[in-house]
Amino acid sequence: MTAEGPEAGQGGDGEHDLLAMLPRLTQLSGAVNRGRLTERAMEAAGVAVDRPAMSVLVSLHVAGGPLRVGEIAARMQVVGPHVTRQVNELARRGLVRRVTDPDDQRARLIEPTAEGAAATERYMRTVLGWFSDALAGWSPQDREVFGRLLARFVDDLTAHLDSFGDDDDRPV
Image (cartoon, rainbow, N blue to C red; front, top):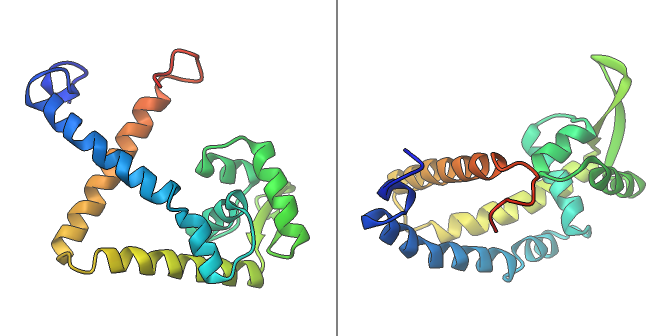
């Protein structure tokens, strides 16, 4: 794919395709954000933390093992001090703990406690159940293709936006 021509949405059918997708992407964003998916799932799962704290717990769950604060921040696409505040609060509530990094005795890793892991598992089961219900009428092949294309789109868009750096010339 090039940065010019119809493939980039600069005329021809490519632009029409992109224009047709834009309202659907906006609709999806609204369903997730305005629909308060995270908050509703936390409530349904009985998890009483705020959204950023839930993101820390989910990052640890998806990683499948302890992570450094910087690794959590990178996965969440936020800065380290933001994660440190969340980890401190989660530790105070007994949902995560700091452990020594076996590869570097000076470093600390963050891992969920049994209570934190159970809360995250309840949350994940809730969200995945809702997604499963939404896709119940889809064939296994459609689900596989959707997952593959969605991952590709997110990866490509994220890489493209990251290529702009932190400058003020990033597109809005």
